[in-house]
Amino acid sequence: MVRLGAVAVVVMLLLRAKSVEQTTNAVRMLGRLAIDDTQSKQITQQGSIPYLVALPARTLGNLATNDACRAEIVREGAVPHLIELLKSGAEHEKTNALRAIGNLSTDDSYRAKIAREGAVKVLVQLVQDGTAEQKRLAAYALARLSNIHTICAEVVRSGAVPPLVALLQSGTDDQKTNAVRAIGNLATNDAHRVEITRAGAVPLLIGLTSSGNDEQKACATKALGHLDTGCCCIH
Image (cartoon, rainbow, N blue to C red; front, side, top):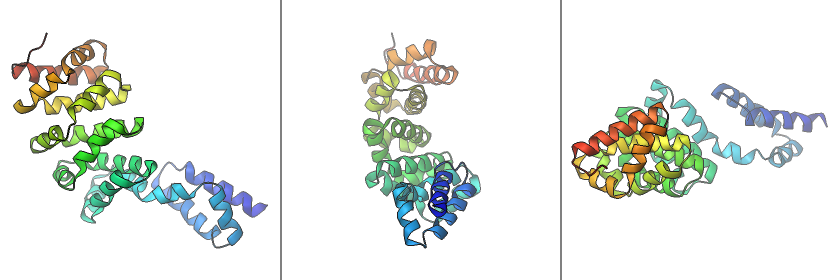
């Protein structure tokens, strides 16, 4: 009973880990316990296997908040693996991979590589069809990627505008923030302004200038300014 109790405690520590160090220590302890067949079965019964499988992407997502770690992650070829998880991973794997891609895309140096590896289309798909958290994270990544003008065309071509506008209309507060960031970046390009307007973004952007939070108001105002500069009809 003592050993079975130890397994439950370690699994709880793993599930509640708040840092890479805590996660690493919990995984090491589980590894030692798993040497025993009885304890190994208990580890499985405690539901830890899906979490252990997801650890690589989850850990990369945490590490990617650090500049030096981002460089190492990209240098070691993690980007294609993360994008493959976005395409065909389990739901928790997709969510963890999205978090990693979003953190990597905060760095200008890696955005072009992420786009070249095929991230844009799958990010657009997840904005449209993902879970609520996946939509939030995918919109965040698209907002970051669309800071690069050469990537904007691919984002629009991949069908990002309608699902981003849908988030403006009915998304959560965080989803709206990420969507309005992305639309503001896309609206800097002449070729995309008409599509943004046709998708119904203008009244939603106008609404955010009065009802949104401070960041939403600023981003919506910026987007409307770009649309107005491009001679799109704003009423």
